[in-house]
Image: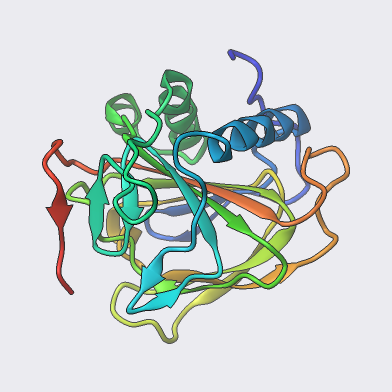
Length: 230
């Protein structure tokens, strides 16, 4: 695991998109991407299958499998109460190390990196028709940074402001292996995925098509179910 996620050079330069938000293109090498794709297949075969969460009665086109905590809009629980009632898989120790390494690569301070202990991972699967509307990640008690990793087909990632779903925002083409971290002043920025680019997955990433997005979070929650009404 010490060298699995070492990055290879990428001609696209890392960039701070807004204060607290950092894009690191090509951070995951091909071997790391293939390894995570293999883990993805294990997770979807686990106790809780992927499902499209329902938002205001409408099922999302993105399918999600969760580790650590099971998420559905406005609620985290240990068991998948809206699927089969089973407890989700734990967040593995190597995922915590991966999250810390990602924060360091994105330029976060040593004390933030050392304290980062993600206890929830949302693994999202996008087929070519899937979309993610503009939203804030605010179902957590913690405002620790969110670490996002992309594998497979490229997408348009729309990263906005903290006040509204509308402009100003910036559209970024996230490709397989890209890292995006947002925290600090950008932690509650609206963001979404309006487009997937089919047939753009690299041949060596382990995923023939579609997109996997892993988002690592610190919830700050206890084992008591937490519900946030909007």
